[in-house]
Length: 168
Image 1 (spheres, rainbow, N blue to C red):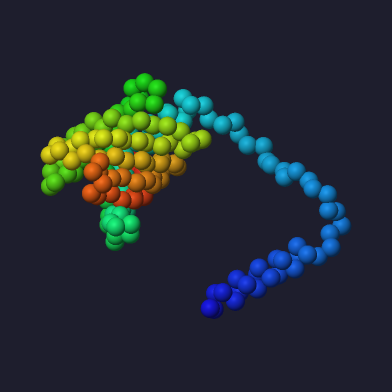
Image 2: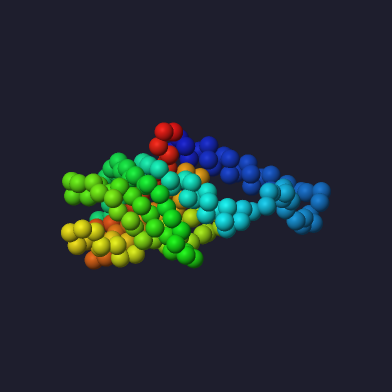
């Protein structure tokens, strides 16, 4: 309630200002500042490659169980490199911790772009032992966020965190 009163006061004062008579009621286009030219696709891909070369993804994940988020847990992934194969096809070379062991894994992925944001998609990745997973992860300015799950729907969740390069 204590935070509701100041919020209502601000809303009321803003509505009073908007109801006050204006000297000029004609619509004007919004002004924009001149931005630098958008990076080329090659520049975006080079930056993405640089961000994920000898990188560690460190963050949090939370499972989704029966439509509810579970308690958050820490996570860390080591990416050795990413390599563009052709078009939107890439390979993510990682050191994967799985069922008590760690091993190198070349993960086939697709990378699409939402403007200047990389969207990495992994579909039907079968891990040693037989479990199959999917993931969709956004990468932007050394951050990541996404979702993942098993093909059968038994497990899945949300993840987010920071991307750092080894030695940083």
